[in-house]
Length: 141
Image: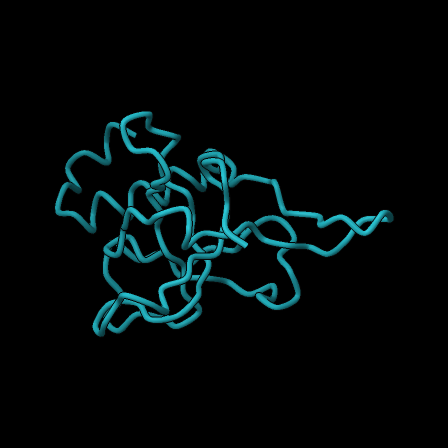
């Protein structure tokens, strides 16, 4: 199920890269961080930074290993993940889904609604700036 509203900045979502992308682009469903707040001039688009379990080779300044500080669905596990700051991407809402934690007592879906703390979001931004060749701007974060 896809989202209808832009998720809050710092949310962890899943992004489906399985259709319309080709190698060396990402090709599967993966976790990602919502980088930007809703931008009115870009309806139904969301800028995200993907996360990966696989260590990059080589590790660059736009990669950082983090542990998401809140519960993830069992499917995704409680693993450290690599920020892929060089793979920033604007994707349509049709590719994005919220993290489903299960069902409530009435049978309705329960979603993960926490966002990354400010310090962790700052690390994500630093990785992105390194990834797009603007590392000198990290001092302004």
